[in-house]
Image 1 (cartoon, rainbow, N blue to C red):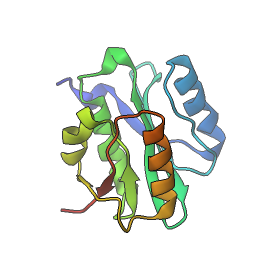
Image 2: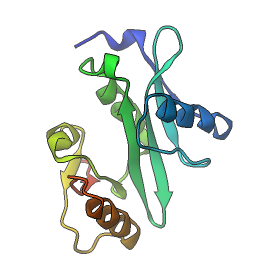
Image 3: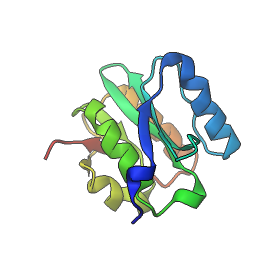
Length: 145
């Protein structure tokens, strides 16, 4: 794993949200940051954005979405740094929909697989829509344990 001291994590201000969307477009990632949704980026030594993640604010819950790392920086602990830095804003009402191959990674960060039953409709509606699009995803919820 790389020495993360050359990387820095920053929450974007509402005025900076377009930088996240430019990052997603430039690197052809799915994702869209919305103004007023907390969004964090990781910058390299040249102050370039190399990773991004957002917390979509929904009724009574939030969805960790748009987690993306530039390909050249994968495998260097950047995603872990991003999510550890974002964790200050996580609560037991924080959900995410990782692809199945990423479940062990998200487990290591405090997320647990949950049954659909009893989850907020704002989460279930999105989850079901994404599954119908053919995405091989899992419903996970943040827990403090």
